[in-house]
Image (cartoon, rainbow, N blue to C red; front, side, top):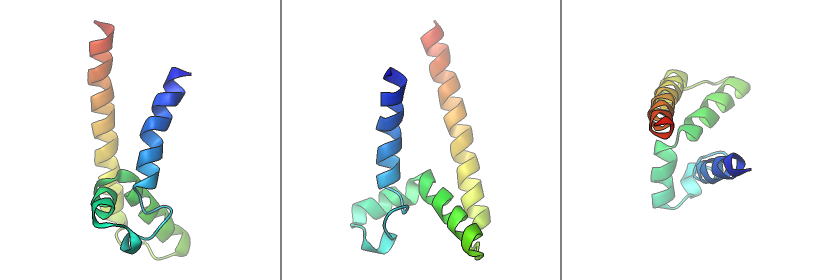
Length: 85
């Protein structure tokens, strides 16, 4: 139960600060900035491009997602080491 709460606390802000629900153009400036650094926005862009058939910046999207995944794994490994001690 505790992990589900942590997952929701991470997932929901990422979801609402991405371009999954609204176009970036209608967002306030501070939310546009969050959307630009949010890996979920790049995932949404990649999936939209592939589904519609116009993958514009697919390599940028995949690169950002790969970097975010590596950073997440490294962070999780470091935190796990601290918890095990």
